[in-house]
Structure formats: C-alpha cells, structure tokens
Image 1 (cartoon, one colour):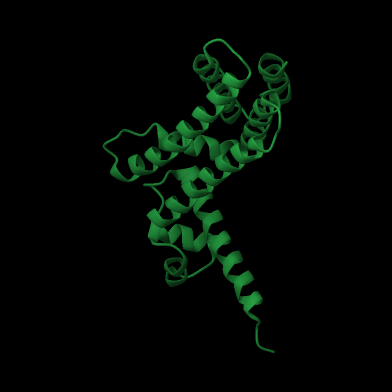
Image 2 (cartoon, one colour):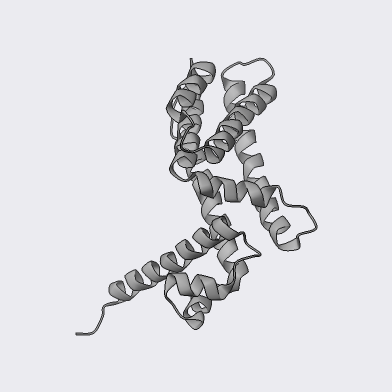
Length: 194
C-alpha cells in the first residue's frame, strides 16, 4: 500500500529530529568542532546523503539547534505576553525559563558555551550573535514589564532579574543532581513576583 503525503511528512519529521538529536548529544558531549559528520550519522543510524538532504552539513545542524533555542525563548516571551497582569508576566518568564533549564541542563550549558566562545571563532561567533540578539529582545520586553509595575529604575531591576535567572541556570546546569531548583524558583518568585 503506497504511503500518503501525511505518512511521508511524518517520516521526514522523525528522521530530521533523529539526526538533530544525535548532533545535539554529540555537540554537548564533545563540542561542535570536535564532532564529525560521520559520528552524527553513525549515532542517528542514517547515511551521510540523508543527513545532507535535511541539513547543510555540520553548521546546518548547529543553525537548527540555535533556531530551536531562539524559538523556545520566543515561546516564553509570547506566553508571558498572553498574561494580563505585569506581575504574572514576570512570574511566567521566571518559571518557564527555570523549568526549561531544569529539563535540559546540558543543553543550556552547550548554548552558554557558544555564547562565551572567543569572537575569532567565526562559526560560533555568528550563532552567539543570534542568541545575543534574542536575549536583548527578551531583556527589553522585561524592562517594559518592570516599567508597568512602576519599579524605580526598571532597567536595573530587569538586569537583576536576568542575572538571577542566568545564575540559577548556570548553577543548575553545573550541578544538576544537587541543585535545589524548586527552592530557587520559590525564592525568585518571592523576590520578583510578590
């Protein structure tokens, strides 16, 4: 029985996700530059030709990962925008951001590594800039929320909020088995949402 267009679409989606998952795993474990296409194809159990059908090589895989991170950040912002009250928006950002890193601490560590690479690494610097642009948009959105809350010096409050979240995210990704994420979330909510 021939496959339907929906069945082909599902197969393509599953295959690209399998390739991307293998690349993510290897990039996080070995680093971007130390991972070869051969290792990705072996882990994903696909041919090189199939990988190149879905992605433009290793940099295409990195671009897809960064795009996923950007979309995740945008989803948090969009979810916050749906909240009516400014305080609820800040709480939503805090809870979702910390929950995301709690679920995948190694992924946060990988993106942090990209963002802190020397600027002379042309490939990683390009993707670090994309991530930085998205962080700046999120920061400006937070500033408007703190302005609406009537906080004195909303930019400083937003900076403290972001610094607090990133500090918790760094600690959680460095010590995922021993970090009291729920207690820290409660502390952030108490500090910024009460």
